[in-house]
Image 1 (spheres, rainbow, N blue to C red):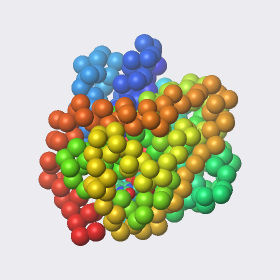
Image 2: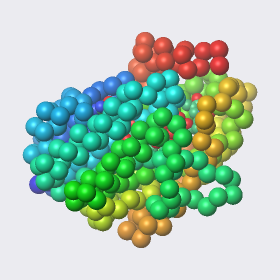
Image 3: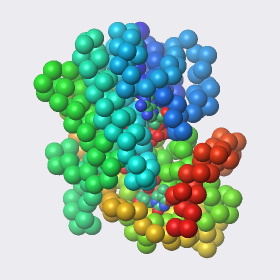
Length: 336
Ligand code: NAD
Ligand code: DAU
């Protein structure tokens, strides 16, 4: 039996990964270390809460004593824990530097001290910066040029992780993924925010003219990629995880409205995000060579995600009705 320390496992991708890995691999145990910030939600994991192969530990990846206590029990680490929302990092980035940079360092030091066999740092395509319309997609060799506080904090964690391979020989792997969508995404991110607002006939706040382009990766495809890289990736290597599902902001928004049978009049253009990255695109040839391919095209991503939010109103209404969410929404969109 192998034990994986999954950090940030109560968040969107981390909880999907825990559900995926416990379902797929009989020989794996999971310890989920999560601080339960506003984005952490144990409801996501109710299906495995009583599984003897699953253990939850509440805590901060920056807590050295706690991390040191857990590390001897595990063979591998998959670090999802992070502050993940760009707009919140624009409001203030202190927690982003704590979780996404210092927290990664604390995990790496403990992993090194205790001889952990594999350390997978979950990074993001945002570390590459922003592409012009005519530029080729980023490869893993493209320079890092992050442009917003979230992306900078993630680049710090990404580079610190690789430095532990280079200087200490820790078997580090890094994945850099595109925009994920699917079940359990906190409704501050564009896709779940727009789906749930549309269900309630509320405006969909499109930043600027809605021309920014994103790739769209279904979350279970991301989980499969992480599972593969953890088992078969080459230590010290970086793997891009994208799906070639590019779409501009207006196209994506209209597809969501169409999937729900809602009118285009719900679209409301609002002030653009400061420093908005206008295009992300990844070259995923390296991960394809390892044996992975995305299973969901853009239509499937949108159809499955819309269906999940329609079927799980209680999950997202509990969040959207909370005081913390309402305060955030007012601060982010009020008078915008
Ligand atoms: P999320 O915000 O939904 O979840 C983050 C989780 O980390 C939460 O459960 C939170 O409680 C926990 N956490 C935050 N700070 C912590 C700390 N200091 N100690 C312990 N736990 C802490 O994020 P997500 O969208 O699931 O993203 C997961 C990871 O994937 C992040 O590292 C993010 O940068 C990366 N990523 C996300 C996307 C995406 O589209 N969502 C794409 C590429 C990469
Ligand atoms: O690409 C990977 C990244 O994807 C991850 O590293 C981040 O953790 C994740 O949050 C996501 O970042 P984005 O900034 O791309 O996602 P977000 O959903 O915030 O925005 C997607 C696009 O939609 C972007 O062009 C901004 C736009 N947008 C977003 C919101 C929240 C709007 O037009 N209106 C909105 O209200």
